[in-house]
Image 1: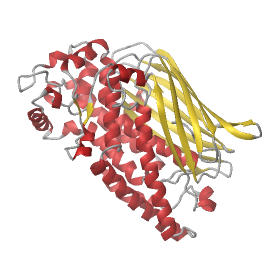
Image 2: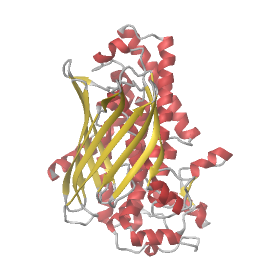
Image 3: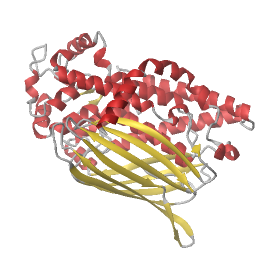
Image 4: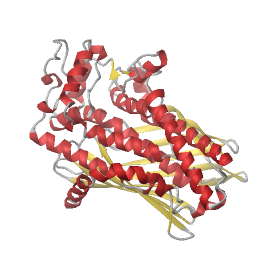
Length: 487
């Protein structure tokens, strides 16, 4: 297995030069409709799911204790908000182009998909880089903040500056040095995880939209977003290689003369690899800020050891594996026969102990749908396995109708506790989600979840935790009751 990971890293490094050219060709592959024969009879149907967890405990209790009950979203709440807005974009672009170029022939289907992907992509781009609030950029910062909130640290998402005409840069500010000192001392792995959580959110957003397409038949025209977010994550992890990287930190420090104006981490991944390798080093050992006031938060490449630089370079190479999926080019379903279809996606998450290399397998067999995932949890010394299984909702007959839906999910793993841990710590997660239909459109949704100590993407807690989410979901233009209800 270790050799396999090294081979993947070498493959990712060797194929970097071809990605830019490949991305230019993606729409040509996608619009052929390969593997989409099941949808030929329903081309005019564009189902859309909207969901929102209104209550998420114990996160909101922790947010209240931090004084941020109405100013901080849980990971699942933030993810739902951003995913919903992208869903609306794709749905209305699909409806628009269905009216302009009705896809009732193969050629018109190709033109329709090209047009929908172009206009949806333009909206995604403007939303992310100019709208900013509630976009993937906002989501990135809210995932950073979630890890701070559960430790009682107050913070501010500067994408909200867009609402008053200010500079909406991607930054989490108004974090006190003494709070970061305390967090590094009490929970060093949680601090490391908070640094990497931003791009974790981007991969979870893409995963959620892939679920929509495979399980719900949503036909999201999201090729541009696939490329945009994946390339952003890759470029961000590899940013330290740029010639002007350290100079950009000097500019950052010059702007952050007041402690409250400083980003809590700087550029995410040199601090991530620094603290990953130094869990016992006090936060204040970073030294004084160049202004002479406060601690120097941002980490330059000159502060990293050779081992840390090599490790970060390897992580940058492994990030290219996030491109490995037919979903990336708009192939949402590959049919094996009339009863079975599948898809696959590879994900490389940086986390509190190193990384998780995941392979997601989407399976539809005889109208039963499953998401089966294999995890490889890697720290400095060990590569440990994990498995994950989720199935589509099962409908229960209540008083002559199928109003109650239950959807189970389970994970089992062996994980290290931190970067240097040589032990294999067993653990797992169980989740049961129930949805009660109020009619053809609206559902009330409740999710009960319990986990042991360990890292799970989309869950801010590293310790054992039970949680409960309550919310609502709406389904528009759905032609079946198997639509995934997982929030």
